[in-house]
Image (cartoon, rainbow, N blue to C red; front, top):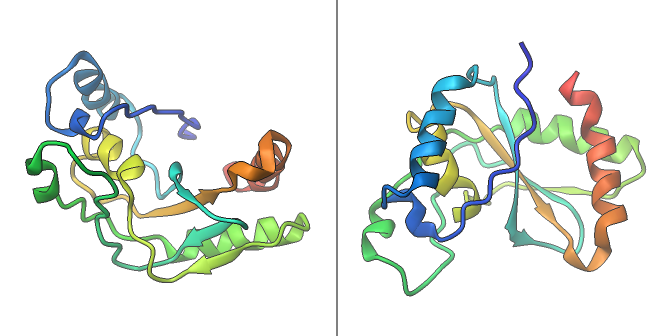
Length: 153
């Protein structure tokens, strides 16, 4: 069974600690999904000029926000990185003529760890992250998705 592609809007980082309807829904979602072998996460909180793929084997939890409940900085989302998935994605992008690179040190920003800490709290599923390029517009991002589509088959 193939895990579907999901768009999960996390709203405030405090979603991770406050039991709102969205918090409860994300926790419930995790009980309905088959556990994927790995996750390729795309977060609006990692912007680069060219696509980059996180390839750290043990990514850090990044606290890329300020002014929120200090308890958030105590959360560590210790899921393993997915360097092999990053390499697969890189090869697919390059085969489609899209220049991309690996980032061997990139951790998980809150656009990744906040929702995934609710959906998959065990933090066992390996994750690679793909950056976005806001200045390049929707056609560029659609091309990224089309290039990566073979990996979903």
